[in-house]
Length: 322
Ligand code: H2B
Ligand code: FE
Image (tube, rainbow, N blue to C red; front, side, top):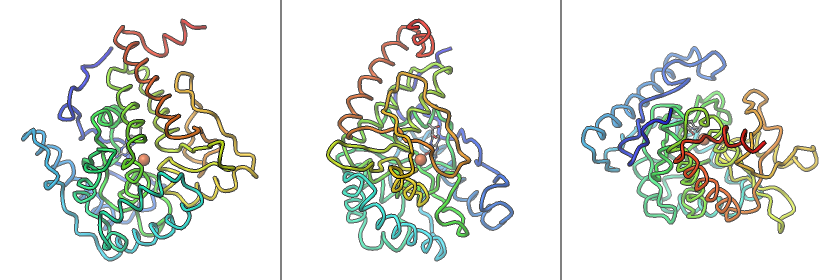
């Protein structure tokens, strides 16, 4: 079954949350911390109420993104993670990321390094950057179809709560630090933003049987991708899950010595199983440059649109090839 595809961001439902949407699981650092669970739920609810409001008004304005009064503890967590990642990323992130982070922080002003930035302010900065993305608040892990479809309309769903203070360098779910440090700096970059839009475009007409594959395309690029260019002797991170995790950055730093595998990006073929529990990735999918990735994903999204337009899934297409 091919669902009715959205024609604008207004058609994308931001209220379908998965996993940690309401309750925390046992392995969550905040499990059993009632005050934390409550805080997280309150911030999440504000995002969902925002979503319902704008859907009714059919007019999404940045000033209505909920303002969150972050606590001193939350600000301290942001400060610590930002400082650490800023240092590590000098050597381990792709240059476009470092430029994006610097530009984003400069545009947000000096307060941004010590206090959690407001999503409304970040939204303004992104909208006027070359990447032309916008952010929409969301209460937690969003359903993959809504999440991917929104990317086609240059919209990135972003959480607003902060991870649990006991584990500042680890979070099993997206939080605002992951979005701000991991995703948003590169969305300032036009070529990268185009890559993300392509993944979104590929998902618009996708039948249900291809959704998991497209989720993996997103996962192995935007979330965990690395760049291995011919002119640099080591892999550099561009994926948000690598950029916002100290363990991943350290793993990548030692990757060449430790025999970590790199696979070139091929979005047409089945991608390896996603493993969540090992702490770090066993292999990374690599691209040579953002340009290289943009070309590949552009062609891929065109291909998907055409295929889906004829009512054929990637799964069926692969089957017919063999
Ligand atoms: N939801 C939110 N809030 N942030 C994400 O980074 C995210 C998501 N990633 N939903 C999506 C799912 C991704 O893991 C794929 C598309 O399923
Ligand atoms: Fe992410």
